[in-house]
Amino acid sequence: MKLTISCAVTALAVLVAACSIHQQVKPVPATERGGATICVVEDKTVREGFLAAMREALEARGMTVTVVSSIAEASTCHLYATYMANWRWDLAMYLAYAKITVFRGSTELGSATYDALLGGGRPDKFIDADTKIRDLVNQLFP
Image (cartoon, rainbow, N blue to C red; front, side, top):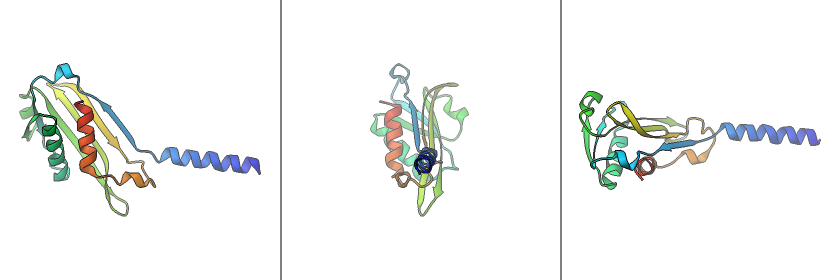
């Protein structure tokens, strides 16, 4: 009986661990920020609201944002950012993955990743995407 309960508890722990949401941020060093201007490379494959929320969050941090259409165009900026994101359906649409990366030239200065792809049965995957994007930007530029 104890062995059965022990096995059930272990199996449950493994299942819960497999259903996880991860967030990892490597902030942009303050010494690398230079001016308060950043170019953002628009990704037309990502829902429109993502770019708007990211722009608002950067402007709230005191930055001037210029949206550009290519990395070649962005490379003329002191700092530029790229982003990617996707949504999934599970009773409702939710932000399943987002990544923002900040560069100076070809050097990556910082990145922020939110990953709920393995969020499975977790109800906390149904977050407000705008709030999460703001959180990622605030951690990138503390």
